[in-house]
Length: 153
Image: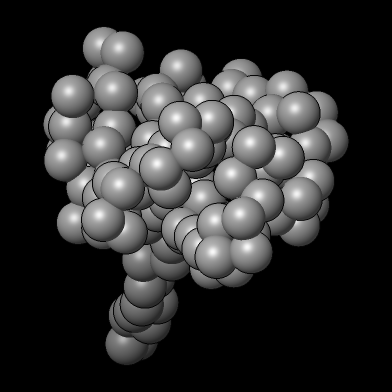
């Protein structure tokens, strides 16, 4: 009589194979999560810088019309950002009171911004010659979050 062989093929994964997959996922997560948080913080800084930079045109127009002393966020048409501290149009400071055209537009990142950039001040300044510049007051923030084209103070 001939013996019948039954071939039992392995089904599923072994414990060691599953542990290796879990370890690889853990290593990737340990690298990816901090990189993602840095990306979010940089994008928030760039968003605030972009929103405040958009106000330069309105500020220039008002300055050319002689409205330097009445400039505020409302006059510039600022609609607000959830990233900047405060509510409504009171969350940025516009200061062109020198009378010579020099001044600044300042926004402070509030608690809705990432913890890495919360409390940073974005200042867009204008000289009396009409030259605009940007600076970031870090307030303990890592310099890697400063947008390109902005200095740090």
